Image (cartoon, protein in one colour):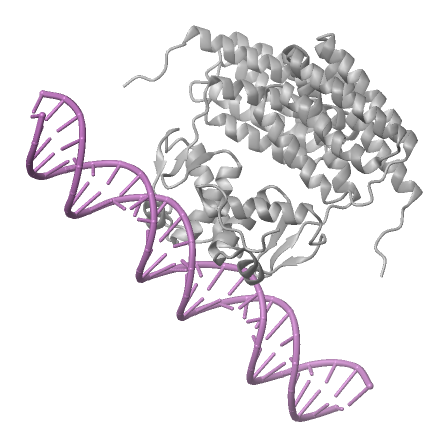
Length: 227
Length: 227
DNA sequence: ATTATAAGGATTGTCAACAAAAATCTAACC
DNA sequence: GGTTAGATTTTTGTTGACAATCCTTATAAT
């Protein structure tokens, strides 16, 4: 685990720093609302403030941080209404991705999706919600990839990352996991059948149901913000 | 028409510069593929290179420019396959927006949309495709606004701006204009009826039909790139 | 004439220093 | 003891300078 990392690529420093900062933020090392001190980052990452600045500005576009003039950059706080908005956006992206993937997915991509679906069934049985979340991301990415639309892929990832600022306590119950993967099965079947309308509908519905699942799990543990 | 403009807002310079550059690029003053010289922008906008750098990095995130390491920043070239991808993305966003707007649009917003629809009918009759394009943007923005989802609104605008890098010769014929506004009417009716499914479907279809219209108008004038 | 090569200029990459604003601490006053 | 005003420190905003890279041009050899 390197403390000071120079540019990994042969290309610009700012890009590398941006990716590092993204990792740091998504890992939860800095809590939402917490301030990022430019000088501190300078020492930690071994680059000058200009570079840090370019990187944080880029992160602002990705909505991972918020920049308050003359006050600095803080990790963005995503509240419940924000998260609900993001689910709706992802639902739209999913609809488009489902439609395209149904028409374009290769047999190899379908096989890969089926394999993921199987593995997730095992994780559901083991009630391993953490591993399920990882596999779930992989499944969604795979559908986006199969859509053959790079912009769609990229936007979905951006929005999902943004959402990750909210989902800290995103632990779903075993029943919810099971339903979620049943929906994956329906998506997969629609893709196999090359049924564009069904794939669009099922993928979109899967996201909207995910929104409902979040609301449910919120009802069961509504309190946050201790201390 | 000021040549050198300082920060309009009381806030950071980079933000203002970013907006100015965005306007400059979208206006077509710099052609796609053309290089933006940092020093030249420095003189023109009256700020230092650091600021220009922050602004162009931000523009890169919006996909309006491409930054090639050690080579500089160029206005992005959006080719036909790129544009087709963007139509599909917007179709997904439209689907989500239609669904939400049907549930949330206020009577005032509906009245505003109806008014725009009427005005566009006049423009169709006058075959004024330039004014139609402007009004069309307003109509789409209004639906996005009515969806009550700020992220959706913002992403749609970003993608549409990106698309504008392609649409230079986007002149539609009178027949196409007429069909386009008929579709607006169907969207409006679905919204008035608060029929979420219909609104989602019609708005999505409107974008996908727009993609087809682009392909048509491409067939009639396939050649580009003179000189 | 064409190509290869080297010198020179132009442009981007990175940094450190200065200026301005905000936050913090101190002290005086009620 | 609490509050306010001022000074100090910290942090961000902006700039100019230096280093590295790329592009152009001139020159020479085949």
